Length: 410
Image 1 (spheres, one colour):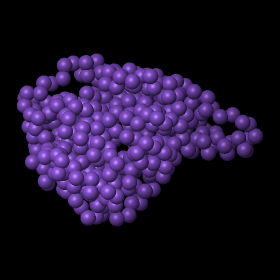
Image 2 (cartoon, helix red, strand yellow; image 1 turned 180 degrees about the vertical axis):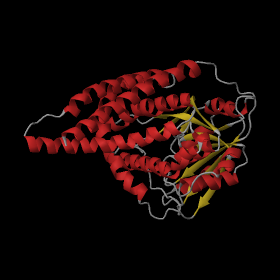
Image 3 (cartoon, one colour; image 1 turned 90 degrees about the vertical axis):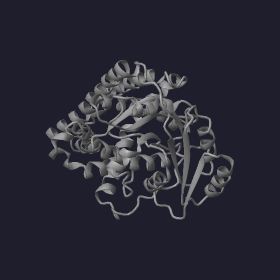
Image 4 (spheres, one colour; image 1 turned 60 degrees about the vertical axis):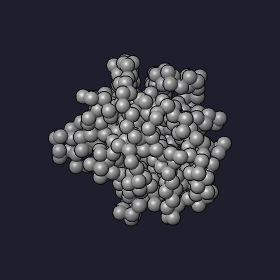
C-alpha cells in the first residue's frame, strides 16, 4: 500500500503543478502574441441572429432583451425560445414582442432542453451568423463588433466555424460568487487562451458564442440528447475541421449560482457533459487528421483521473494512519505548494482580464478560497458525474434542463 500511495500522491501533486504552468505560459503567449495585436476590423455587417433559449426566466429575460437593443451593431434579429416554462416567462415574452420590433418569440409547450431550443431557433433564423446567448446574460455593446470580423475578414475567417466570447460575472455579493468571478478568469479564460495556442479548445462558452450557420449545418448542429450542448458542438465542429476561436474582447455579463446546491448541480452537469464527449469521441486516436485534438482529449481524461486520485489518496492516507497510528499526511504539505502556484495562476489571469473588467483585480484576495474549496469539491463532482455519464438512461431522448440558480439577488 505504501508504494501505491506514493505513486498516486506524486500524481496528485505533479499533474496540477504541470498543468498550471502550462496554462500560465500558454495564456501569456496568447496575450502578447495575439491579444495585444490590433483586432480584425469590422468592414461588413452581415445579419446576426441572436438565439436566447429560455426556461423559467421571467425575472431575467426583460433585462437581457433590453440590453440587446442597445448594442452597437446595426444588423441583427433576436429570437427567444420559450422552452415550456412553468413560470411567467411566456407572458413576459409576449409583452416584449409587442415592444421590440426585432424580437421574435417561439413558444414550446414541453420542456425539451436547451439544445432543442437552439435547434428550433436556428430553423427560424435568417442570419448567416448565429449568436447563442443565455437568458440571464447582458451582451456588451461592442461584442458583435469583435466577433463578426473573425468570420468575415478575407483570407482570415473562411474556416472559422465558431467564436466564443468572454463571460464576466456580474453578481458579486457573496463569497461563492466572488470565488467564481476569479475562477472564470483563471480556470476558463486562461485555459482557453492556452488551448488556442495549441489550435483546439475543449469547449466554447455556451453563455456567449457565435457560429457560422453553414458550419453548424455541416457538423449536424447540436446534439439534443447531450447534457452540455456547448461541449458537444465544439468537438463536432473541430472534427469537421472548422476553426473555433476565443475572442476575449467580446464580453457578456452573466449571473452565477450563489448557493452550494445550485453550484453543485451546475458543476455536475458540466463534468457529466465533458465525460459524455470523451466517450463519444474516443475514436479520435484512430484518425491521424484529428491529432491536434488528442492533447485536449488526454488533458480532460487526466483531469478526471486526478479527481479520482485525490479521493483515493485521501482514503489511503486515512487507512494508513489507522494501521500505523502515525498521523502524517504528505499530500496536505504538498498542497501548500499547489495552492501557491494556483494563486500565481489567478494573479496572471486576473491581470490579463483586468483590461476588460475594471474592478476585477480588487477581488484577487478572494481567490485564496479557491484551492481550499475547489480540489475537494471538484473531486466529489467527478465522482457524482462519472456514473451519470457512464450509465446514462434514455440516451436518445432530449436532455431537458432544470430551473437554474441565478444568484441570491434574483
